[in-house]
Length: 460
Image 1 (cartoon, rainbow, N blue to C red):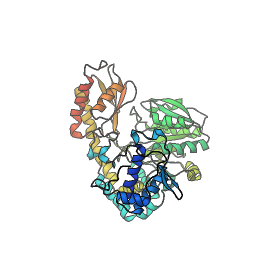
Image 2 (cartoon, helix red, strand yellow):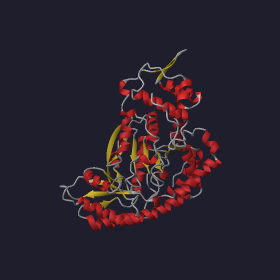
Image 3 (tube, one colour):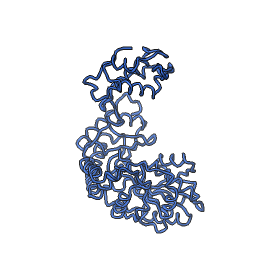
Image 4 (cartoon, helix red, strand yellow):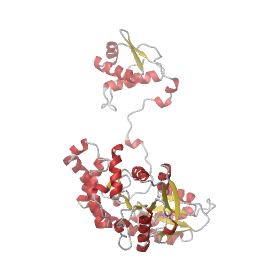
């Protein structure tokens, strides 16, 4: 076995026994120590490696635990038999990884640091660690932290006209966890059919279909989902986004809202209201939520903080009618909370201190400027190629392709320039303008349209 070289300047922080363990492990994997070969005694290894006997014993114990060596009483340690497939290039001992050695999804996309004040978030996070650290020694409430549920109720009542108590709020780490809860609650209610908007948000359709629900796609008009096409005399759940339908941008008028509520009342059905980016409306005041008009407890209100804070904060919530909240209470012990407790508490302080409201006002102003610049740039450079639609709210809008071109191909070209643009179908793309810095919008869109016009792309 090659001699063991003790710690150098590059691994001073690594304990000696770990360094010795790694050295012996590498010798075994490289085949320099053969199966059944006896290792030096603890005393001999300590002397050869210029370490203590305790260090040798710790290294051997780790090798024994992981199965690289076996111990024979009154005899010593021997190299264990390891499948030859294990002795590959994959098993080369690598140095300690550094953060800079890795690439991350989306790191090539344009980013705008003006969209969120992380210093205020850090301030609230520090308060959690300094003042409420004891709360982090316990698991999070399955329903979500009570203080955050209270702040959500307070905010939604003032901003969206949503009326609810904290007991009706369920917090989850994104829509997947909430969909799982909803699926079980709806099943307990005898509902096995979900109606969705067409066109609409595909992931929610897939989520319910994967859980055994039947899916009925209902056409959408300028007034939202076609209520007359919803099933009657069958308990159903209908998923709608009345404040900003995706991807058309249609807003359900007040008359249609009341007709939808009446449909739910007459048919013993449930409305799933996705209010995903209603706060980010740039023309006029935000449209009041459907839930605030409901006097029959038939609306489940769904919301998320991803658009109004930052995408990595996977905190979503739903507000259940009292009866459904009771059903969740009866089953919640079967689940655990997957949403970070420290982030929930940080967000509660962020809202309590008024930072969330300030951030919303800032985003409305900033995004209104961005969307106007985007519309002007597409009009200036590409009005013969695409048309901007659904431009009144949110963090994205739709590009309708005018010429014979592939949405997927055009989207890929945009991504090469660091633009977050996603194909929706053959003729439409979803353009995320929110993370493009304001001062770069005109030039970025100019370059993207020029790329679309390149003769190497036959379809443009």
